[in-house]
Image (cartoon, rainbow, N blue to C red):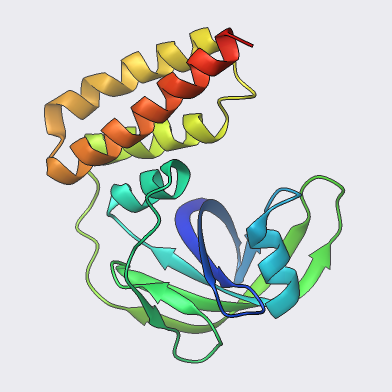
Length: 188
């Protein structure tokens, strides 16, 4: 199973980095698969810890990919790290083993501490649409423009029926960034 989360890590100087990531959950292990090169991978290899944030504010997913990264954070309780104040829950993890790979190493982690902050009340279709659009944005350089446009058109149907102010803001960030990147790609 893959859970869409926000992973927070710290660099050696203590600066926080936020990254939306699909975390693989396998029995009692969490598998983080960051691409090389990435800040998340560098931070994880340095500290050997991270915080997995479970969040329903899709602006944070969209913001991490569009330069809107200033989200309130608090200190983790057990590990040296931070969690999102907006997190419904967070899980502090540490690496127990690594399967090396030239492109995308597998970092197997175990939970050190888990905290439930608020109940999850479910996603509406607009939140799902923003999450999927954010994933498209992260892959815009690997997919044909026609596929991206087709997917966005489909996602817009559910988005338009159920979006609130948060989802509207996140959708604007993501779709503007996708349009900009597609425009750049078509002119290069």
